[in-house]
Every structure is written in C-alpha cells, then in structure tokens.
Image (tube, protein in one colour):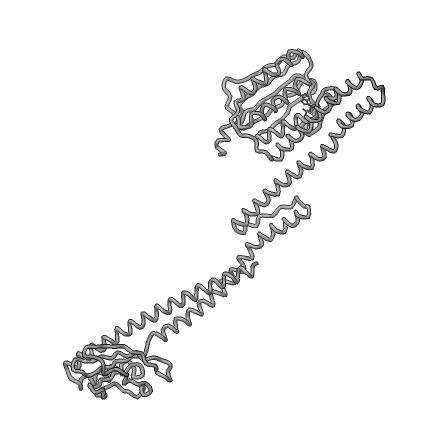
Length: 461
Ligand code: ADP
C-alpha cells in the first residue's frame, strides 16, 4: 500500500512535469523564433535603406562589419544582383556547406520578404534566413544561426535536473509521510485483530499523527467502549437469567409437584393454580424489569429528552400513594416550592423512578411513621428527595442497594425482587442524572434523584 501510493504520486508528478515541460518548450521555441524573425526583418530594412542611400560599396562594407561583430560563423549577409549573382557579402567560408542560393528566390517581387530555415550539416544547427527582393530587383539575404534551439536545450537540461531532484526528495518525503499515516491505520488494524480474538479491553493509543488518524482512533475507541458496555450488559443479563430466574421457576415446579404428589382434591389444584399464576406474573415483571435496566444501561433506546414538569408528576404520585399511606397509617407529605423549573428527561421514566422510591419508602416504614416527597432546584438540576422514617439501611449495605437483586435483611419479609433501585439508577443515568442515598438504621432513609434542567438540554442542542 505504502509503495503503491508513493509510486502513484511519483508517476502523477512526473506526468504533470512532462506536460508542463512540453508546453513550456513549445512556447519558448515560438517566442525565440518570433523574436529572431523580428530582428532579421529589422536588419533587412536597415541594410536596404543603407543600400538605397549610399550604394553598393557602402553596403558591402557594412555587411562585413555587421557579420564580424556578430561572429562570421553565426551570421551571414549576401547581396545578389537580379540575376542572383553575389555582388557583396559577409565572409562566406563558414557557410560553404549551406546552399544559400535558395530555390524560388527569383520569384520574389520587389518589396517581398520571406523566411527560410536551412540546416547547417556539421554543426547540427539551423540557419534562419530572411530573404528580400529590393525595389530595384536586387536581392538581400540576412541569416543568423537559430538561437531558439540552444536556449531551449539549456532550459530542458535544467528542467530535468530540477525534476530529478524534486522527484527524489518528493518520493523520500512521501514515503515517510505515508508511512507515518499508515502507522496509525496499522495500529487500529492490529487492535481490531486483537478484538477479533476476544480482547475487548485494548484501546488504540492516540499518536498525534494527523487529525484524520486521531479522529479515526477516537471513533474506533468510542465504538469499543460502546461494544464493551453492550457485552457487559448482555453478560449480566444472561448471568441474572441463569441465577435469578431459577428460584421462581423452581418454586413453580415445587408447587406443581406438591399438588401432584399430595391429594388430588379440586381445591388444592385451584389454590396451586392461583399461586402459579402469581409466580408467573412476578416472573414476567422480573424479566421486564431486567430488560428495562439492561436497555437503559446499554443506551440501546435513547430515552425521550423532553421538558418534564415535576410539579405535576410529583402531585400525581402523591395522589396515587395517598390511599396506601392512609391504609398503612403513615403520614404522607408533598413539599414543593412555589415555582420549579422543568427538567430534561422522559416523563414515564421520572414517574417510574418516583413510584419505585415511594414504593420502597412505604414498604420499609411502619405505621405511625412519615414519608415525604420534595423537590428543589440545586445548581443546574432539580433534586427530588423521597424520605421516610422507616427501618433505615445499615452502613455496610449502602454501597450495594443499587446492585441488581440486592435485598437487605429488613426486606426478607416484604415482597420485592431487588431490582427496584437498580432500575431507578439506570433510568436516572439514562436521563443524564444521578441518584444517591442517605440512611441511618432506626431513623429512616432519604433517596435523592438529581435531574438536569431542561434549559441545559436546549443549550446542548
Ligand atoms: P426490593 O425493594 O424489591 O427489595 P430494591 O432494589 O427496591 O428492591 O431495594 C433494594 C434493597 O434496598 C431493599 O431490599 C432494602 O433492603 C433496601 N431499601 C430500599 N429502599 C429502602 C428504604 N426506603 N428503607 C430501607 N431500606 C430500603
């Protein structure tokens, strides 16, 4: 890959350079040729003016001087009579191999000027020749070795040196840069290969080798985090199913076995049937709660982030639990400030959290006790506090109360499955909130859920 990329760029570079060289050469040649023709034409005009004014003798001297000044092997000037015989010229020795009596010269009309290019055999040069028919029918030839070719050759040589140098430097630099970039991709590939073998803990280190590679590394690591969370959740759910569904199923089986073994009265069947239905219901609730927790923890389904009016949610909850409080002889209070900002979250999730906390508060508080529910703004959030004067939780158990299937000593005789607080925590986290507990044995407990303000949600958008 590295070699292929480097070669591709090198080839592209050479192709572009050659196209550039070709167009430059053509332009240079044309430029030099036009400039030389202009200079020859100027010579023709100057010499013909001299001839007309001062005659042939003056012209002959001038032709020789001009050729010597330019170098007799570089320039040639010939004055011919109308019968094409040479009447005056610059030294012609260097031009013996060049046929200066060019065909068709006699066909030129007075005032005509034409240009020709003649090869100079031994020197591998060309002679550019301007031929003019003067007003009196005589001819003037002014020639100069072509200047374009050597200049263009010089330019081409220079170009190839620069091209060669740039190519070596470019290929070397490209090799290094592509190597650096590929190193990042290779690391990601190696880690991906490791994960293929089951190692979900490795992460690709950020090497700081270019923004694109770092973005790829970040995206890859984020994906790994997400996969890790999903796999963990999946493992926990399967563990839970393996351990915790066993007991209700065993209970159901035991019930049916007892009924089958002991008498076969219709009454005992009816009773067993009722108990099995109850166990099944509990089992369904257990499985659903387990799935809800897993779903919230894994972030599979994004909870709705709406502005939730806590005053109405808490008032509804108060109304719902009022009969329970009355029945149990517990004083139940709702303490709300005049105004309460809306929180960001899913209304159904907030309702479930409050209901679970109240359910526990009533479960673990004896008659004559108190349960209260309050809400107050704290920093950029609102804190919902569900407090009771119940049995409280031993300090040693406090870190475990939010674990799945944890049930304290006090709850041995109360109904429940140990998933209520785990669900509260999972839902709070899914809403971007937090849950905490303060408790003292014999005095009571206070569970607090902090939820972010809906204003923060708008800022996030
Ligand atoms: P469950 O109530 O079904 O047992 P939870 O997850 O709701 O499960 O609670 C876990 C444990 O935390 C309970 O078994 C209990 O020991 C303790 N707990 C929860 N809430 C309270 C409370 N308000 N007062 C005392 N103990 C509590």
